[in-house]
Image 1 (tube, rainbow, N blue to C red):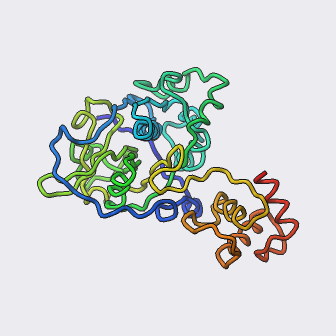
Image 2: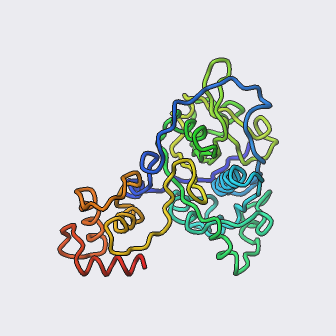
Image 3: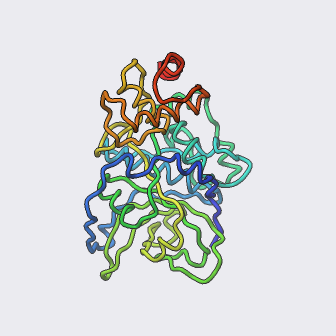
Amino acid sequence: MKNYIGCRDTQTIEQKGKNFSFSEVCTAPTPVVWLEKPRENWRSFPIRDQDGSGQCVCMTLATEMGIIFQEKYGKWIDFSSTFPYQQRKYPEVSGCTSEDIYSIFPKLGNIFEKDMPSQQMNDSQAMLVPKEKWFDDMAKTWNIKRIALSIDFEVVAGTVQATGKGVMVWFKFHPSEWINIPFVSDKVPTSGHSVTVVDYILKEGKKYLVIQDSWSIKFADKGLRLISEEYFYERCYQAAYLMNFQVQNNETVFERPKYDGSIVSAQKCFKWEGLMAGNIPEIENWGNITRTACIAFQKRYNIVPALGNIGPITRTKLYNLFP
């Protein structure tokens, strides 16, 4: 089996602290309903094939966008993985970084597979796929946010249950472990890989996450694998899911706000800046939470003194940033 190095956890602790967390953007899911399911009833979507490239992260991104599109519009559309892959932070190196997923790709949006093909290519081939000048503007149609989840088996399953989406999970493993039902061995993990959780099941009374790989249907159980709790907690090091194209499932979509001088609009701006939790109600009240967010905003933009009230300098800055 090939040794696929497709993702690298490069975020600092400070950067991870700025990721929106599950508790900030979505109501807590109800307890997961674990059920036995025959193989033919496992939820799945078209399996992608990254072949010799390090595109697993981008293929997971494309799969998750396809799931959202299907849930929203009732039709499957293949999104491109080549479009974001060509614009990753380190194009000279195979694979993607945490910064790509959390900082770069959400801003790019994406386009359709038919416009920039992605399947069965090595890195060199993927980098040579023509990118037309209007693709960047077209991609903004599908601009979405990525939200970090805690490394929690039940939270991941609960997110799939509550939202109907897929969840990205990143694993470190030794290639010999990566079979139909991956197992924890005593070998040192040498591979990094991103896959999509699409379902959750009971099998002989044991809980499993159903994941889709991007190694084609030739691997595992026609592209699907079962991840146990034991393997998840030993080998998973990152989890996230995509926000929708618009509001759905009690989620807060962070559309860029406009500052109009009101307290509520200031609170929306602080949320956009990541300085105020998304699940805090927006009300015309300048309390301690808003004041703390304002102080952080003033420090970020070197506004002194940073007292947590909106004076002329802070007001002008908000108007300029959020016209």
